[in-house]
Picture 1 (cartoon, rainbow, N blue to C red):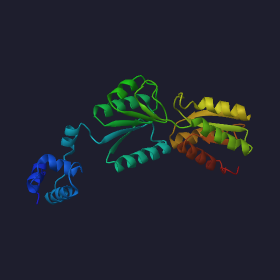
Picture 2 (tube, rainbow, N blue to C red; picture 1 turned 90 degrees about the vertical axis):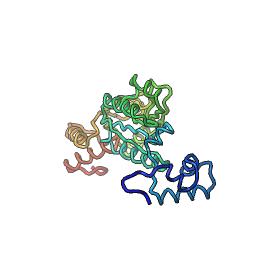
Picture 3 (tube, rainbow, N blue to C red; picture 1 turned 180 degrees about the horizontal axis):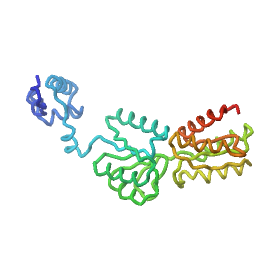
Picture 4 (cartoon, rainbow, N blue to C red; picture 1 turned 135 degrees about the vertical axis):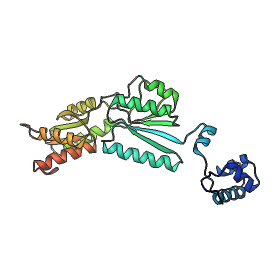
Length: 268
């Protein structure tokens, strides 16, 4: 039995099994030993209450099993879902997500990214607020970085996962056009357009092709802010007949404003 208040060491497991500490270490990692030896070592480790020291393991391997995950703005419900999914996938691979929120602030984003780098996470996943910041180059040179939804234009070594934003915008505006809408308000997050998501360009091109009027309105992700903006739009002299929201958070704000005005989304 393990002694109270004392961490069982790898050496004690080795002594209990008659193996070297190296062999025990391999067995606990399921490497370079027979199945029988692995099971014997794991059984002894469980009986002794042995748990691997994460600090010692990180020092020995040069890895922390921690992946930094930096959200651009967790007010965005889509980003909440994205971060949760990333966390689940990492855990399934015996990795752990250290999730931080930039809150839509590009300066805070860079500060947090540098903090994650200095904490020696194994890698960094980021949904960037400002993907063109010069600092990304040095950060991506220090550790593996993958941008989700954008490419980090100053960081040539960074990976990227890019969405087909043009196809998405075309699909939505074509659908609204087919329903008879000719005046559409497009609510977008208050983030700068980038080469990978130039919302203003894609919306303008699709609107011109379809022959409809589309007004882009930048809006903070907070539900209350989106409601205020939507309320102002609905109270205008000639409001749009449809609102295209770039995020669930913005859509909830529009629903709230419509309810206040006794309007039914999809009917009025």
